[in-house]
Amino acid sequence: MRFSIAVLAATLLLATPAVAARIDLAGQVTYRERIALPDAATLEIQLVDQTLPSLPPRLDVKAPIGHGQVPLNFTLNFDEAIIIPTHDYALIASISVDSGLLFRNFQPYRVNPLAPEQPVLIVTNLVGQVVKPGASSAEPADPPHPAILDSVWTATTLGDAAILPRTKVTLTIGADMRAGGSGGCNSWFAPAELDGEALRFGPVTATLKACTQAVNQQEDAFRTALAAVATWQVDQDRLTLFGADGQPLMVFER
Image (tube, rainbow, N blue to C red; front, top):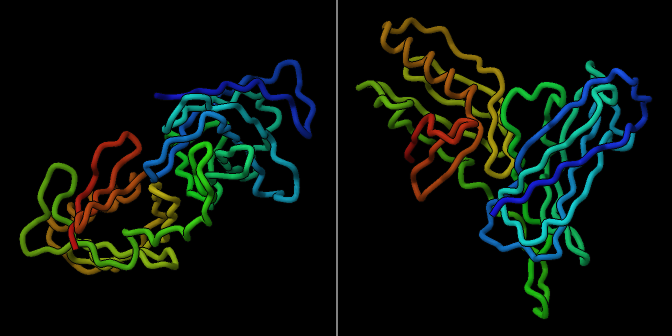
């Protein structure tokens, strides 16, 4: 079951001209744990200005979830005049009950509120313990070490095609969020951003070895796929990277 909030936000910090355009910023909030939310849970979405982090959030809206379960759909409605085009913005999602915070994304989700480059999917992390009414609470456990980290993953398929024979395409992401590996001929490096099941790779740099045309084409396809990665999933020794549309881009094994 999905839940949606639509918020008509008042202008914060800046006066809204009468001709200001209305903006709809839609997205989803989810989490990895297979836990049902209490009926009394609420979803809060904040739009923060990362260029001036000392300022209050540009938007801060909250609504009850009721019987809804993840993914939770939300839509923020606001005037474009509250956004400074040269500033960087991010979203913070929180799921709470009266006893405290349950879920929150550890890293703000960077977004262009006027023109998001991709569907907004905020993967939150378990902060507090979710208990049934009348059950005793427990100390929250430390977040598990993401299964994708600190392993050498070797690609088996790229899109619908198998990896070329006698080439080895690899991926490793360290705890310091530095990613790298082999594209089949050249070594590659890129920064990574990991937030729950959400994953993004920054600009890729690579060595410049002379390779065959087929291998060059495979490396180009690999770098294009890396730029399109939105989420990941590990099932035992298999890693699948997905695009924003939920379709698999690459499959790896370790």
